[in-house]
Length: 311
Image 1 (cartoon, rainbow, N blue to C red):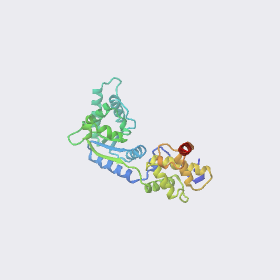
Image 2 (cartoon, rainbow, N blue to C red; image 1 turned 90 degrees about the vertical axis):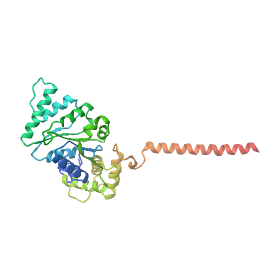
Image 3 (cartoon, one colour; image 1 turned 180 degrees about the vertical axis):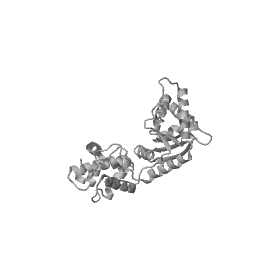
Image 4 (cartoon, helix red, strand yellow; image 1 turned 135 degrees about the vertical axis):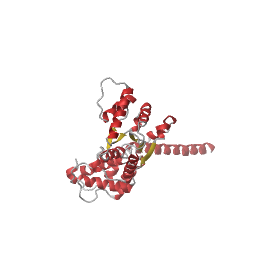
């Protein structure tokens, strides 16, 4: 790998969300500010959405790591659960030791009692669900019913939903209007601008231990940013591949050639930025040109034969 070649201690552009690389980009900081403000109010649902790869899980983990001590957090990274499974998962996250035979009414009562206990101890309980667009319809309703549990002054449970834009589409349905009205705060993560991506790349390289001159030219960062559509995950993939190609040639600085090759080799990038024609594309173009020449020749030949017959 290229770590020793560039003098790095760790890989700078891995796909695993790592809060040690959290940079504090504007959309991520704004999302955290909205979450912190919403949690302080102690009311209802909070929703954060964003396209795939924009950093929802990173923001989620940053939130969990930075919650003050008075918060008791229940975290469900995979909410594709039936209502029954959802209740058991919440109970486990709340630290409940459950008997073997338990019906759903008893389980709900035990959860309520545990929430009251935590409230009396001074805790604010927060249920955080990542990939919330995967929640089945019945489980969304079960989740809403959880928020009916309250004291005279505040809710016993706040719910934070992280999800893809499909979550908004689902909640827009009439059958979810009750839950939709309980969403007190929401935020949508936008893609990054090219200058944010430039700072993002430089920051991650420095955290990884790189101390030399800039590895990427400004023009190449713009090229990568456009191809990645401002999505951090795709930026990570493209920069990692560019560094690999640079290392493979023994170069000390990434070139435009490396960036273009990384773009051509990557799925789900901006296709208008796949620089250069592929061999199959060139073949199609050559066939079309040949066909056009043949048709032109036939038109000219037909006109010549017509003139001969007239004479």
